Image 1 (tube, rainbow, N blue to C red):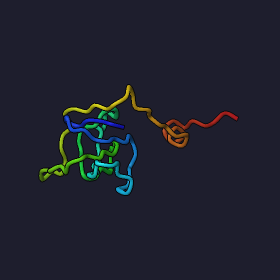
Image 2: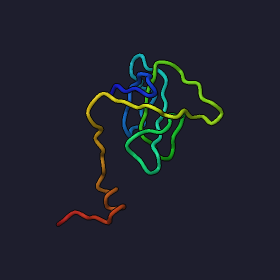
Image 3: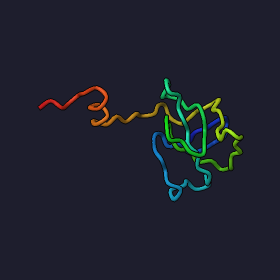
Amino acid sequence: MKAWVNGTECRFFYDEVIPQEQVPEGFYYRYYLRHDENNWVKPISIEPYVFVNFFGTVFMKNKLEFDKNKFIDVKRFKFEGKYIQFRITESFLNKTFGLQKAK
């Protein structure tokens, strides 16, 4: 979906790692968004790689310049659409809450 990170237009894929082979036309630079440990509904940083607290993948038209910390704070995040649909799997519910399907 179309989104803006710190005012820069990008293509955003919530909770998905998109391979470089599937780059959206015109948006050649792939980065990852990280969410806060206690707030999973908005990104806090954009980074070349994210392994923990992964929020999603973004593709941008221009290459970003990172400082020595290898991240940029996300001060503004906006996406086209009214909401993001969160997907929760049955196995996640089972592991987290010990829930099982009724028989």
